[in-house]
Image (cartoon, rainbow, N blue to C red):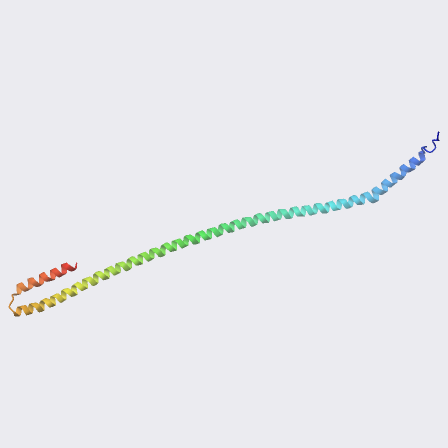
Length: 168
């Protein structure tokens, strides 16, 4: 059998190894773990700050977008109101122009009718005057032939009445 010296446990070796391990742990903790944790904490703070800034920027952008959407909506509403107002004003103007044109046309027609009546009456009066003149001349000629005056007047009156009634 072999000897157990090779497997023997030395208590001092274990204590020294444990002390080495504790010292190494303390050194790693002090010089490596704390700075790495501090560095990680700083980076985490920076990342959190970036996220917070991004969140704030997103909130601000959302607020700006909502304000812009509201302005666009109000601008569209205002444009629609302006268009509606312009269309109604154009319709009113169109109606006014058409009404004025109708009134003017009716006035022109009335003037033309009045003018035509006056011309017709003037023409009748002129024709009557000519008939009277012709009748007078005819009467003079007939008187020269010895026609009595009462026959002559009744003849002239009947001719004038017939001519006046025919033109109407």
